[in-house]
Image (cartoon, rainbow, N blue to C red):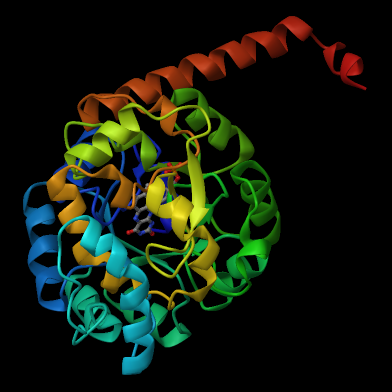
Length: 367
Ligand SMILES: Cc1cc2nc3c(=O)[nH]c(=O)nc-3n(C[C@H](O)[C@H](O)[C@H](O)COP(=O)(O)O)c2cc1C
């Protein structure tokens, strides 16, 4: 069995994007049970929590499913840089009537410990973003029967994943909501749109490609498959689903988003991410290059974002969402997947009818 065979064998080639803070296990379960493939967003989980969460998903009957980890670098900032970052955030905490947090003891779960737990949990698929595994780490997952998917935002990153033995590539286009997964080049060299990126990666590596970014409905799924992707990965399209994990103000911002609602920012976390533009993004734009790298800034703004979510203040929440956000609709995640697949079939049938109508000489008219 290969990852390509697994994806080709899915009743519905739609993957629910892993989304820390937005996609609880119930979403993964609903998508897998509908015939797509759900993903557990394990990036923020303590290592000890990974095995029980994977076991619960398996026991609930999610087959197959993926588990996703964020490859955050170990962070040991000096006290002065944490002080400076907290001073920059102090007016925002004060605005909410919150005290600035103390210096955290740690900034993100330990990746090596998370990875060891993931190997023990041995899910059908494991996906990674922000960096790249070593060949030995890929081998360790293969030894327990887990397929490895690496996130790439450009062709060199896809090639690098192929070289360490990954089984597939998640091609993350510019349109995508949430953090950019770039790791080989600066942001500027990592902003390829989903359509070009999927085609370029398919040409560059002999691996199945999962297209991600801006796919919001069945027509988008049909487009991804027509490009040659083995599956479409959708995140933003699930944000209003019954199974969503987003807070009430975030949900409201998604429901009310306009046609051009999102921007990239590194002000919230120290790593560029796409979200619905709000006051924090606008007012921090001038100093966003000065904030400490992920995961430091991420950790320092966590209490702010949590307090803002509780207080219903969308202006201080990282409202991660992709460029297609205005197209997000409510509904049961499983029903949505089945509906999109129906719509993808209709779109493909329309395209086939159009091709037939053009007839044998139709292609001449394209010249
Ligand atoms: C709220 C949110 C959280 C996300 N969290 C993660 C994550 O934890 N791990 C990951 O690999 N990608 C994450 N992503 C990116 C998705 O995997 C995927 O690339 C993106 O959702 C696809 O674009 P779309 O949102 O336009 O569908 C997140 C995206 C969103 C919108």
